[in-house]
Image (cartoon, rainbow, N blue to C red; front, side, top):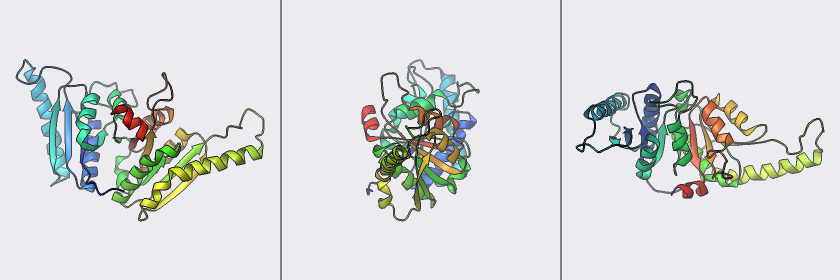
Length: 290
């Protein structure tokens, strides 16, 4: 743990209900952290004001930000608020503006998305490329105040995700569940796996969980449990989200040239979780984006 004061929370806003949900979640987070909240609206690439920009577009953008400030100020009186208007694509604008923010918060879908999609391109792109934690406010956001924090770990590199989960739990006074889910490699068709092979693999998985959960010692005031589960990691975390206030997952660098940038587990959790999801880049993933 460090004594560095937290910086502002950044939220992307437009005039959709998903964005309002994200902005409210971000405001609550800023209140808990004792920081300010910055609201950003992007109008897409174009000429800056005064150099031929469409006045109607700028007026509409200003209106979106004014409405967002009014809504947040009414629900969170006294919270320091800033606004920013960006002439860039939304994901790129958020990532660039987050250089002096600790956390980015986005909704599931923004303007221009398709209602049939489970998650919009802005949310996916921001979560896939930001070098700091990104929360996608989805599902039962109201559970954040009292629901537990569930963090899924894949290997020993996921300590930053565990620390993030512990810090969030401490702010809310809730418990943390550190989960490592795995499928036995020996399981194949109708062949019964040898017990010794499963026992050996379970021992390895237990050590992975213990190493990833090392930050628990840094937060003795937070109630925490570790849980080794046999099952699909994505399915286990999505099921856990039905009772959680926040699910935290780690983002690793892509495993190959054509691999999903977020990884299949993170991708599935972002699309199907029933509560907000925080994507925390590992050190290697964050350095890749720097």
